[in-house]
Structure formats: structure tokens, C-alpha cells
Length: 401
Image 1 (cartoon, rainbow, N blue to C red):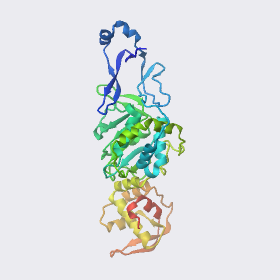
Image 2 (image 1 turned 90 degrees about the vertical axis):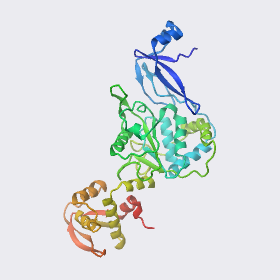
Image 3 (image 1 turned 60 degrees about the vertical axis):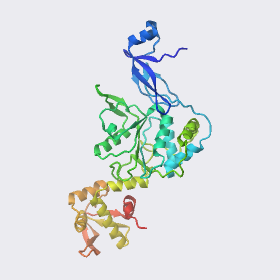
Image 4 (image 1 turned 60 degrees about the horizontal axis):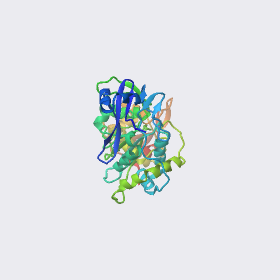
């Protein structure tokens, strides 16, 4: 049967063309085609053979892909590689290298992408100061697996108002990320959990579309590639180590295993349960790399106060320390750091999520003298309690050997 590369959607004609890539593959894209040109090339009778659709839709599926839904043409791309039983030794070793201690969760992440493409997932961030870690290879490997459903963005293209080239993609990968504006962080946080997005193309009106995209960020800047706070649960930050030995044709060998790897994902039992809207809990995807990133985003007041409180805890061998905002202000004034009671109250309540006592109660107040010595004195107030465990978990640089 003759393959007809044309479709009519609404009143417009399109041709499905295969655009060659440097890698030797092809990207299938729909291009506007003129009705008169079709007549010239194939004769006017050819128009009656062209499939007709009422409009476009985008419904992702890898296992049971359908090109048409109720008269609408599905613009999601079917995958070219078919699952087939085989050897996945290198693929599993590579996943282990990327995800480390989170190996099983990493396999769950890839399995969910393949079997449940509309499932909301965390923003995966792969970071490392070192070169030759395999971050870029991981993105290229995913591109070979998910093909046209993965797209690469730059920082500038993500900040652009126009998003027609990525609004319908499964994976949106941004390499060499540096989001130094808070609005970019807020935008990616919003998109990572929403199921609706406004699609905007040049010269066209905005329209609402269903959104199922997942973000993968890669950066060589481990400490400050994005600004996030201590309460953030949407980021899965993984520090990727250097590959033991660079192998030639490493990516090609991974690509060869893709059909077997897809078969493995199809038949593997998920390690984790569906516990949150992003599948994984914040505790499951908490890493040292995330803590380090959060710490470097903290302001100087917060870091200095944490250091002072740890000093009190260590000097008096305590498991927690009590303080009122005024105590913190007096202590910080000795370090010549500018702050005020309003900022300190906000820090303790909002950022550290602590609650003060409802009434004025007795507590042991710490006092720092001019010579730097500390003492505990009896006082009364609506104090906050800061646990030693909170400081060691959230301020990694305060931990003593």
C-alpha cells in the first residue's frame, strides 16, 4: 500500500518529512504544504486519498501509541525502537553511575517516563564541577530512547516567552544551567507540577494546552546554578562522579542496548510506591548535593546565626537551644552583620518553620560577652527552640568531624 506523507488538519495541508541530523538519524516533522503543489506532484485525484483530521491533539504513550483520537491527529511522536529481550549490563551500570545510591529510584524514574509519561516527576538536576562525568552522555542516551519527545533548551530559550517548540515535549533538557533570576526558578517550579500551560508561538495567539513535560537540568556549577530554599521538595539534585575510564563508542554501545533496556523497564517491578504528586517523597530524593545547594542560597544572616547557635550547643553540650529574636539580634550585632527583629522573626518562622511559645515562659538564654565568652542565664519570653539535629541536617558546614 502506498504511504501517503500528507495529512489535512482542519482546512490546512501538511507533509510529514524526515529531516536528517548530523548523527545520521531523522527527525519527523510536519511542514505546511500547499494544496496546488500536491495537485502538481500527484494529480488532483490524490487529494481525496489524504487522511483528514479535525485538529491536533497531543496524547503521550509509548506502549499503546495511537496516531488518531476521535478525529484528531496526535502530534506526540511514536518511538522507533521496540522492546526486545536482551543484555542490559552496560545500561544498568550507566544508570548506577548517574544515580549512585539512588540507583533503584533512578530506574523507577526512567520506568515511569516510559510506562507512565503523564506522571508528574521531580526536576532532575545532574551537577558536577568535574568534566567527563557522563551528564551529557545521559541526555544523549535519553534522546535516543525518547527521540522527538525530548528537546534541548538553552537558558535564553527557556526565558523566552515563546514555547511552541517545547510545550508538547515529554523531556525538556537544559544543559549548562544558570538560573540567576528568581522568576526563572519560579517558572520551572510551576511547570514541574502543573498539567496546563499556555502555548505561545510567534505571530499567534496564546492557547491553553495540556502539559506533561519533565525537566532535566545539567550544570557544572554545583553551588548556585539555581536559587532554591530549604523547604523546596521539587528538585532531585545528584552529584555525578567522574567516569572511571572513558570508553570509545560508549554511547553507541548504550544505544545498541536500548531495545533490551525498554524490555527490562516494561517487565521490572517498581521499587518505590506512589506516595506524592511527584511520585517520590522529599525524603527519598534528598541528597547532600541538594543540601549544599540550599546552603549556598542562604543569606549571610542565616548562616551566621546557625553558626552561633551551634557554638552554644557545643559549648554547653546541649541537644537544643532556646532563643528569642532579640537574643539572636544581640548576638549577631557582635558579628557586625546588619539585620533587624522583623527579618529574624521571618527567618525563624518562615524559613526554619519554627513555632514560638504561646505565653512568656522561663528558658535558658545565651549571652555572648565582649570577649567572646558565652554564658546561660535565666530569662522569660516567648522563645523558639532550635534542635541540634536541625542545624546539622541543614547546615552541612557546621558538622564537626
